[in-house]
Image (cartoon, rainbow, N blue to C red; front, side, top):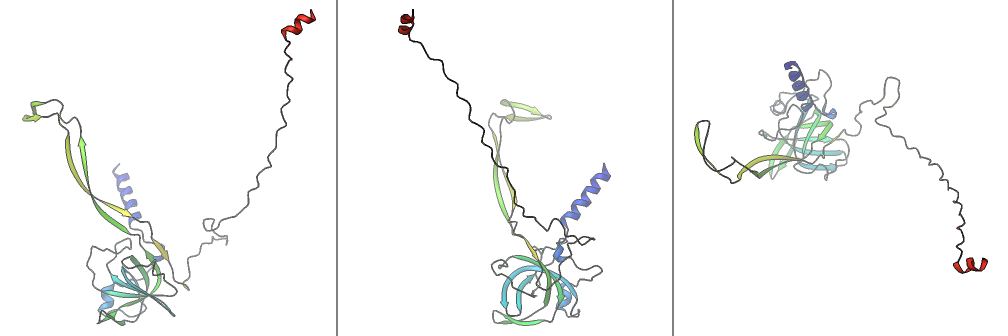
Length: 253
């Protein structure tokens, strides 16, 4: 029984910490962290996987630039917003990025290669951004934490009334209901996550070993032919017997 519990726990932890496909780095690839790039201890073209909160999005003729406030990543690849941010970086994407989708304060993670530092200004203050050329990204769903207070009622609390004994200690029994407050925090998920790769980046092969396409990525549109409806023949009408009047019966006699 213990082995089953341990195996189930390992599977659940593996499922919770799985990284999206668009953020998967090549095998044996060494990913550099943000701090090493800031201290200029990392050369260009090194592999990196960073994330954070979107601060700004700009589209130009060469592509798109996402300004991101950096946060450390969890094991699942999602930024840990409870940790401390130590700076910003710019993510360069080939192609168009919709500012209405990549809105400010959305949480995003990117995978790519480290580029040259970019000098810019933040509210009249000069700032040097580490940069990354994006090869894959994942826009995480919005999660809102709400504090909820509920009132629970326990009827028939301690039947009867008067004094009694419980585990050797006296208490006063009451017929009244027991009301108590319960504070808890719930998470509201928007389920608006999105993954993608910039234009020009090769995607994963979805064909099998024999070159046939996967059935999960293809859909067949066939028109369903319904059989013709047959109209049943009309039911024969039976002649109702003629009712003989009493006067006609007397006349026939």
